[in-house]
Image (tube, rainbow over the protein chains, first blue to last red):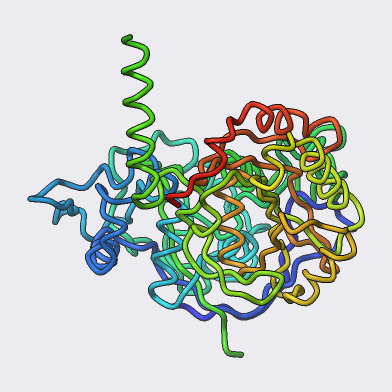
Length: 236
Length: 192
């Protein structure tokens, strides 16, 4: 895992005078969890086998890219080092717990993701946003490539951009959703009028896309472009 | 005749289901141990056996939570008398780090909740999983305040979601109506 030192992160949807979020030091997996790693987990925890998982916890497409052998399913060996996809939030959370880890929060994930190759906050660096948007603009390939093949960022972390979308612990906690308009009392300024006017950095389309994507998820969704990595509280 | 056979088959299958394990799509699939307001350890699946009206609440909140609790009390008061003690009411703390069984008990007393109610304290992980299972959203914001959905859910006796409604005084009506339609024999499932 990579050590990430504490810092500040300003959620894009808060207005410029609202407080930043303090992210405590923590550790995060250097790369997304692979098919091989997830297979080890499933073998130790048969409840998470494709044919055993309760429907509350995963859609029909759960691990649908794995191949059936005998009574269980397993990843194709050529996919071992590719990130595991078609996993629900419940499966991801359970995997991380089994490793004495947890899913990163949105704030932690975004904090790591805003690092460039050379600094903690690369979001103002020329070309930083464009590079991410270029990836978002590309049609997705049939399957993602192996993890850890790109240049690591400032924290030594791979694949924050350019490979897959990732689950976060509180993926659905930004209440800029339809339902929150009439039934939650806090953060009214978020959706008053519409959307981006009050945001810190309206040009950060990439982050807007991630927030939008996360808001659209349901914990049991299993998608071909969505995987995860784990995090852990830091000691210092 | 055919209808009778189908009805008989259906009742039979529900009996078989009743004493088997928790259904695949039941909210009670969320495993882990919770604590009641009396400090008793409890698994969600032990809530099975009768319909439950469940909501996630922030005990320290001054805005929508009292409304949720009041709306649920209204459901209880409007429950037909033959079902009155056969429908349970569950309040789950959104702030398990701040709440103790003791504070939950104090909350229950302050609100004058009947013995049909149970208050649960879990861990942050359990609360997040249950919240997701109930399609409910929340976020802990500055100063321990919590922004959260206002959803109240009616679960059947096996923990499957029957009706979800907004926990306001008028929004809660679909749950009142759904409970009125429950046949007494469905409410009490002695096998569970």
